[in-house]
Length: 365
Image (tube, rainbow, N blue to C red; front, top):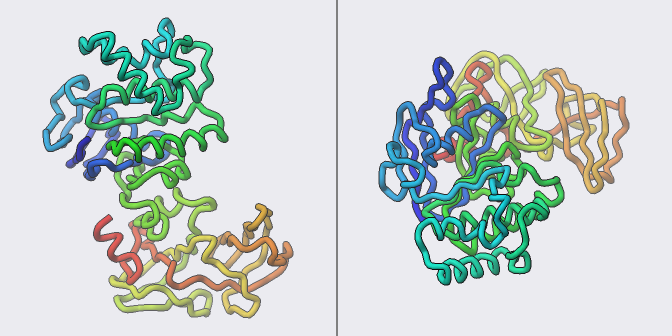
């Protein structure tokens, strides 16, 4: 397996720039997620890494070798697509063994390797069946088997679970992560599903409009988003952001909202003008005695928890609270925020201000 390093990668299609100066490193053996909405540049980035697209500029290193000018077949990687791309006239055994036969491996050696991979993926019973009659999950296992059998330096996967239904998709995500852990593979995985990325990834790159907004471990991205986009893209419901005008200076540890002082992590930089106070729904607490007031607009029951939507002087807020806590629509209450989990945003640049809470993440993410 191999480390993969991307430096200032750019891709232009005529006047349109799909990827803008992206840089990040995927360590050997990591399960690395490229996450973002449709059209953000994640698949284009993956295709350049795989050799299916040529970069306009920038460098791609796999296992220390610059591969930007190499064809896909010369990069020693395996690609798994969303639509499986199996050979319909071949059975499962022949589909999995095709890459080895193409390399000139003997029939006996190919069969032995195919049997080994089939046991790993628990598809031994279907090896001699045609692929046309298989379920979506079994087809995906066959596609994975065909990629694994070559033992490449890295696996590149472009939304491989996208064609599966929601329940089976979650099951296959667990299996895919477990398979990765058994193999110790370097895996790069494209998805638009933030839950899938958080569930499987060791590291996540969040992209938007061709730009890397932030990368790091899932919890750091969730707890300390570097930009307003990351704050809104990760989380369900996403991070609340209260809009207000004011100023903060280095060392400030509280701000005024509608005359109520709200404690925030100590800031490391100053800014004046439009600001945003970001807080996750689970860090919003309903407290009738609190000074910052809000009106309950809606209550959504989710079993063990409920999502309460509240109107405030600075925008809508959603709170995730225990379902046993009684809340009436139309009532007025006070809000408290967990001061250790607040992020302040410069509304003009949409980036997070450095604070005592997020400084390390923003520096190294």
